[in-house]
Image (cartoon, rainbow, N blue to C red; front, side, top):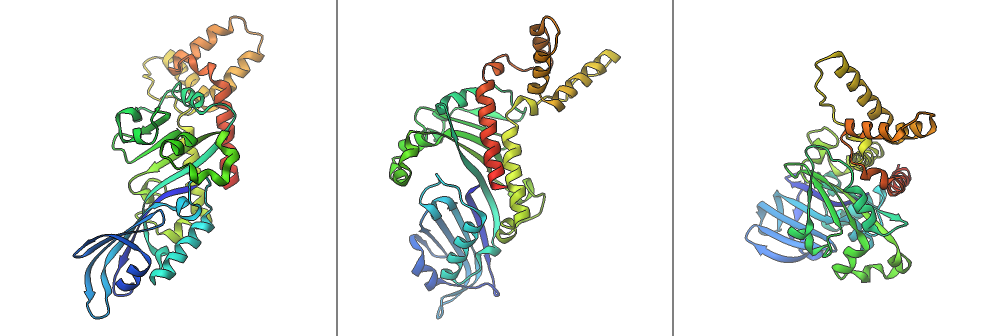
Amino acid sequence: MIDTIHTKFIIDKENTLNLNQYKEHIKVNRKLKYHLRGKMGSLTFYLTWYKIKKDTQIISKGYLIIKGSISKFIHGSNLSSVSRYEIKEAFKEISSLLGINLLNSDVTRLHIAENVLLKHPTYQYLMSITAFPRLKRETIYNPSFSSLKRRNKSCETILFLNKNEKKGIMFYNKIKELRDTRKLSALISHFDILKSSILRIEVKVNSKPYKTIFNRKQIILSDLLKKKNYVVLIDYWKQECDKIYYDKVCKDNYKIKTKKDFEKWLQIMAVKELGMDHVFQKLDDSLIEHKSNFRKYIREQLQTPKSIEETDELYLELKEAMELVYNYHI
């Protein structure tokens, strides 16, 4: 589930780093007086130091930041997701090369992502997603007017961010993105998938994931990869995905002035609790006349557009596919 990850390792007297050993394994592409930037596969390394012994090249004060796609580092592409065991082994391998324990690094940013295999063309699901109301703080960004244009030239991307852009969720055509960025070579071993419809769902926590997800002051990588915390991470991905749907975004801002207002508010909360699918199914099974009027009334109370009903099939398939992904990782 984890794709992009940012970590920060503090170098001190107890956790020193040999600069020569670092240069031996990291391909340095930028040098400053007290700073080096380098690459190892898909991961970028930013090393900054304040104290170093010139004779032994041992750094005793500084920090090492690692950024990048751990999926691409392990598999060569992020078409396949990685398990927590694979992530742990990858960081153990890098740690042995550098002579430090990177599992003690602080996790500062996370992208939790999964590729969902679907039946119909991806753009149909993207259109169905735009039919649903959003949480008040979320806005839609048109990739044709942002840096995302480089990823999807035909704008087959939908991105929702909160106001401060510290977290969000993005849906896009994964095959199209690989074609547009000329990374089809990564798909040679997945040739049959080239003709498939794959929707990538990325939940981004761009700042303080330890606080946003775990409500903690910090979380180190070894703690993040423990089963109980990894389950919390997967649950967070599922919760953020669920927020796009109408049965999760019913607004609780109804003004109550009279007894009738209170009764209406109770009705709205009941529909929210049961879910609109369940309520409409109950209505269809009933012997009530003029069912369309009741549907209209419920939509008006929940401020839900009619076009949702036209995308029920796609909605249910997408939701089922996300449930399968969730259950697989749990």
